Image (cartoon, rainbow, N blue to C red; front, side):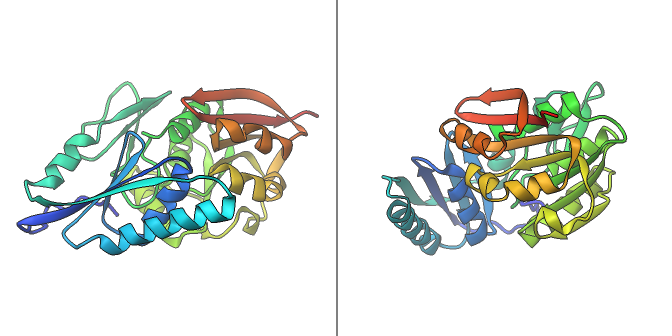
Length: 285
């Protein structure tokens, strides 16, 4: 389900909404993906939507969400929004030019308008509605961990799969992967991305990890810290006794809160990229 379509008839103008939250970036990203089906660009802590339709309602929704988040959390959450009407100068090509390939461990993640690399495990991901193209620190850290620890024949479940990039990577290393996400649009997009990469998930469903009756060598969850805390029992339930957890989407100041829910695990590796942390955990026994 790529966002880029070459047959769009360009109007004289388009609208660009730039959203820059002071914190809780992932929550704002999830909100915007639920509100808009237009192209999204992530750039230096901002989320940019471009559309030929007016974006006033989405901007109002973001402002309301910011107010409710501040009230609910009792924190000062700010979000700068800028809406512009811009003369159309082929923003599709500009958008494509802004998306660069990225190397993470053994993997080379590239959109369809770039050629693959012969010396890497290539993953083709066109920017789409579901989060995960390898550019964000949490995704690249998970790919680094998968590159290092996952072997052919391992079983893996990708919880909150999004674009499916993590389980696609594991599948390309020979792992047998199940994927799940609470967003049906994400699972649909992930299946398309699997097909584009010549691999197939074993099982796909919309819902939580515990729908599965299996236990896995690897449980991967790149989700915000609050959700990891909320579903910690589910993640443990589907992990083999000697299995490995890869947890990401954790801001530095939330790391201790997450680790308290996984006290029976030892930290094999902690991957830090800017303010984000990815934890690779294994049972102590």
